[in-house]
Amino acid sequence: MESIIQVEGLSKSYHGVNAVENLCISIRSGEVFGLLGANGAGKTTSIECILGVRKPDQGAISVMGMNPSSDRKKLFEKVGVQFQESSFQENIKVVELCEVTQALYKNPGNYDLLLRQFDLSDKKKAAVSELSGGQKQRLFVVLALLPNPEVVFLDELTTGLDSRARRNVWKCISDLKQKGLTILMTSHYMDEVQTLCDRICILKKGKTVFRGTIKEAVATSPFDQFEDAYLWLTDEEDSEDENI
Amino acid sequence: MKIFNTMLKAELKLSLRGIDMLIFAICMPVVILILLGIVYGNKPAFEGAEYSFFDQSFAAVATIAICGGGVMGLPLVISDYRQKKILKRFRVTPVSPAMILCVQLVIYTLYALCSLLLLFAVAVIFFEFRMRGSWLQFFGIYFLVLFSMFSIGLMTGGIAKNTKSAGIIASILYFPMLIFSGSTLPYEVKPVSLQKIAGVMPLTHGIKLLKASSLGLPLTNISLSLIVMIVIGVICTTIAIKFFKWE
Image (tube, rainbow over all chains, first blue to last red; front, top):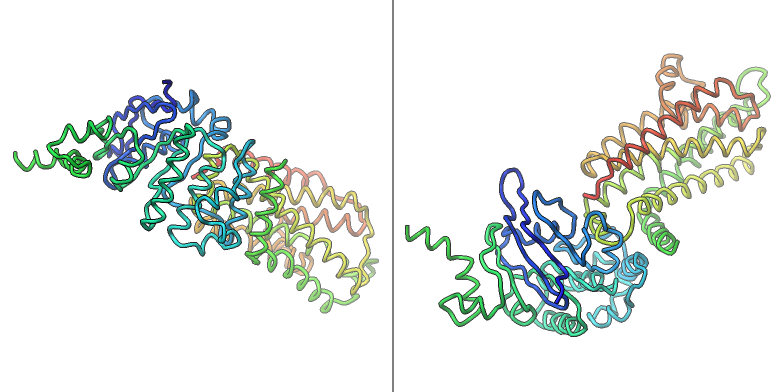
């Protein structure tokens, strides 16, 4: 299958400190790809470079065959993005934020439907600032899905959600996956990654320490559980250092 | 057009909910106009003048909303949207920065026009004001003043690091201009030295021309004033567009 997101040799440093080093990923159409790693491992920097919001020091990036910075207007008709921090105008209401976002796209989805799917219908008239953390999070997933996208970027999509809300979001994402949506997501929850992701890439201090399927990750490690394997993979170098 | 209309509607609502522009662009000019009317009454502008001091002041007060919206409101809203990462979110959508700026420009133009309309109504109803010159000429100059003041605001909002520095720069530009250029305190009652300082401000030039056109007087030294406003407008707009930062 063709590759929808192609990243080759992406590097980015801040003030001489490498945030991402030589990242290579290739995400196929219809795939859910998880970018994992501890806080500060470089997940968000990677996503922002792929989106063209940050300028990489090195590397070639293409999303749906386009350059995210120079083909911005065309590309983002078909790409939905949920950033880690939600940002919105002061005093704006849920319905207004949805209306404005919907107006930005040529062939948008229906926000009423999405709000219902994400259990936010009764909050339409509420100010966004008055929503709980989980409700805000769900609203911004709704906004990311509003363009009727072919590719979605979800940065920590269920952080701050309770168990039930997380399950609901998973269900929605799985449904979208069935419909052929390509998803690049980051997450700190290994159960979520196991449920949703076809393939993963694990970052540690900007370096890629693993790339492959969850099964392969478990097989690489001496453990049977993915979470243990993940911890082992992200911890390996340090324990080696300690042994020396 | 759909994008523009939807954004304009939403942003206008947000701006009205913020109420500060209602105070600074709509209420404040009316209060100042009424005060001038009460203090100076029907006194002639100078001995033997055919028009009153109040008539002479009308055009100046009409620029308060332009100054407040352009130099204060505009840079603050742009830098606020940048700092809150709202622009960053817009960046991963197909909308162009020009559209975002355009919506805000229209909002502050609407404030300015509302203020003008309200001031005109108050002046005509309560203080026997009448337009002696041509409305066409008045509006021509009015929109030039708008262009040059808004370009200053666009530039400030465009290049300021954060909301705090935008606020400081805006205040440094706004208050001296408001006080010295004659939009609040009449230019004519100021000492000559202050008038000279005010001469470098684009708003002073704008007010001079607006006054002359509202009073039906011949426009003198028009080229200098026009050049000052056009040059400032072009330079600041160019800088604002060239150095626009999403983040």
